[in-house]
Image 1 (cartoon, rainbow, N blue to C red):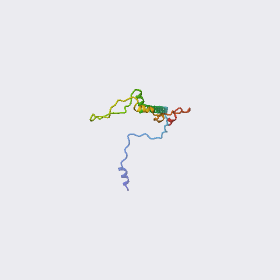
Image 2 (cartoon, rainbow, N blue to C red):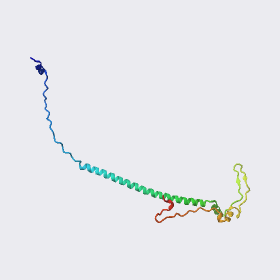
Image 3 (tube, one colour):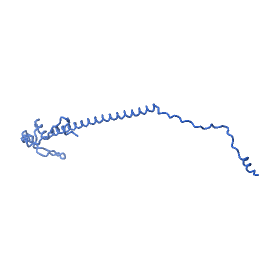
Image 4 (cartoon, rainbow, N blue to C red):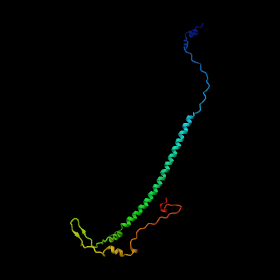
Amino acid sequence: MNTGGLRNQATRPTPPQRALKLPRLRAVAPQPRQQPTTTFAALVVVVMGAGLVGLLLLNIAMQNASFHLAALDEQVQDLHVQEQALDLEVDRLGSPERLAEQAAELGMVPNPNPVFLDMGSGKIIGDPQPARPGTGLVDDFKRVPEATRKPQPTRKPQQTSPENPKPQGEQR
């Protein structure tokens, strides 16, 4: 007889009995999916609206800056023209011929015999003589015909057209 098989069963430990029984698993129906709430949709709409309003305000600010820049450019051009006119006036009033004429109107006469002082030695170089009316450069200048005098620079008036009120030289 074979007793080996019985011995194996008798000596085999048995699993311990569980004190707690686990609930049995069962299939559950899936939960219905909830749609996004209206709060989230409203938040998205508000964020997008704020972004669009921000872009609109930025665009308006850039346009205003562009108009201001154009006005400043026009003002710079006007001031440049005014500066050129003033430079011409200074050149005209500061010319030697004009200064000689103004000196003659004040009763001044040029001295054809200039005298120089040597600052190192204190010596007088030249023969000092008083100036007399009727001699010198001013009278000679008045006798020179107009055609041989140096002409004064003149500005051309800038032409405008009815459809473009800006002078033609200032167009870009």
